[in-house]
Amino acid sequence: MNKIKEIIKKLWQNKKTRFGLIVFSFYLIIAIIAPIIAPPYRENDPYIVKQTGFSAIPQKPSLKSPFGTTQNQYDIFYALVWGTRMIFKITAKVIIISLLIGIILGGVSGYFGGIIDEIIMRFTDIILSIPSLILAIFVIAILGPGIEKVVIAISFVWWPGYARIFRGEILKIKSMDFIKYSQMIGAKTLWIFKKHIIPNAIYNVIILASLDISNIVIIASSLSFLGLGSPPGYSDWGQIISVSRNWIISGLSSIEYSHTVVIPSLFIFFFVFSLNIISETLRDIFDPKLN
Amino acid sequence: MKRFLIRKIIFLPLTFIGITAILFFIINTLPPQTLASAYSNSEKELTSEELNTIIEKYDLKGNIIKRYLKWLSKIIKGDFGYSQTSKMSVSDSIKKYLPATIELALFSIIPIFLIGNYLGLKAARKKDTLFDKITSFTSSFLYSIPSFIIGIILLFLFYGILGIFTPARYSIETEILISSGFFKQYTGFMIIDSILNLNFRVLLDSIKHLILPSFSIFLGTSAIFIKITRNSTIEEMGKDYVRTLRAKGLDEDYIFKKHIRRNILIPQITVGGLQMIRLLSGVVITEAIFDWPGIGSFGVKAARQLDISGVMGFVIVVSALFIIGNLIIDLLYAYFDPRIKYE
Image: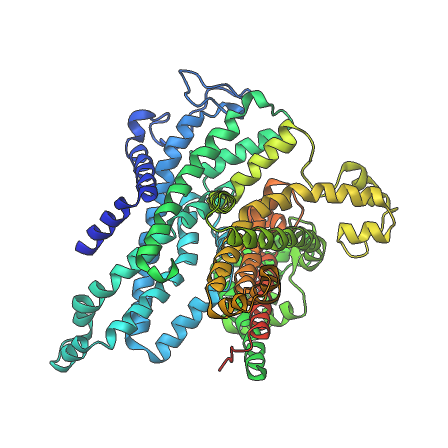
């Protein structure tokens, strides 16, 4: 815990990263207070975008809809705010699931070694040899589209990376003396695992997991942009970009309503940008050689 | 070197078998009725009775390993089944769509290498000047923009507002020309075909359509290449041998051309190569934005419509390209850096 505090302190000292942290917490706050700043449009499912009509011509920002509306009158502000909440939910779920699988399989692989290690590591090699977006598309094609399916698909392509790192950490710790002593005095494998190995190895894995958060965000929104994510009409960053694209392709677009493209783009960009700044500094702290 | 080559070539089919095995086991979580559609060879076979005969014929409720081996032998022969989305066999669809993707990829990779190399070297030589700062800021800025946002903004600017470039691979006139049979498609690569047909109007037309999507890929992916060129050049400039060369009184341009450039080739190949591979999967998004009829568009369309054989063919082909790309990078790496002896 102290180590994490120290890292946050270091992050805060860097001016560029401080900007990133502020922007990131801004998004986090939006995600938390979404029900207050954008009251749910449908009570049973707040993620359904507020739709104020069906006209094909977007509307400019007004008091009623601060960011204006897109084609088919989807409220951009509503979609972005609830989309933020959605992306936080998806990312958190993906990280938790893939960390869990990665830690369990990486741990088993690293601790026991031998044939189990060989099998698990070859399996991760194979998954890592397929481009993650492509494999995620494949998994969704089998499961069918949907938000939960996006979580499953991304977790499926994400855990091998964590498993590898965790296995490496375990191999390092396993050879340390204190583990050998515990084994000598007759401690059970599971106990050693719980008491010694996980607390020592997990720290690096969590730091490394936080480095690629922006990639999860990009893959999740890419999938929904491709029409493989949430069903139509949901608050979802990828989907609002897809709606804007349809508007441009339909030939009705004009510079007058450029907010339908510019606002969502900037909104998504700043989030990814802040995450990238933070992870760049984290990487420097973690591996000073790279600098 | 020889040993390394042999090892790599032995591992290539093994990885391929591993990939197909995992994909096969994933699709086998589907109910037999849906699964059967992956075995059909034409539209007629997609009725429920026909599907039942397929289930029996291929023993879809039977032993999975036996079925996998049977299926693998089909795949190796290039028989991926029938794709419902493109209304033709999967291997024909791949033959139709893959050239478009390769054309787009080449059209973006070459500028990335040329311009990225130029900008990176120049930034390194002018380290800490305004030029260097602008280049590195712009590239790290562009790197943070997700590819679908770069694409949508370019599309809006150049198609929606200015109307200079249009999406798709060619204009309607060219499409009519192709369907009328006066324009023969020898290779599937529009640029090569139009030269072979001696039709320069089509050549111009296809180049015009290539500009926007390849520019979009260029903006998104050149950043890393610029960065790696710059950083490795700076690192190389500080090395002892460069100091010796300077002390000998050699011309700075000569040192760059003959010594530094050659030494930074290695990071450029490894990183540049990985870029190409990243490009392969990012191209799916770019194709979707610009209506580019490539393998990515085909795969996504198939994925949306539960066209299992289509998606399967798509993933297998892309993964195969991926493995081959990795192999090429390894080989180039070993070739350019003789110090590396793979044991």
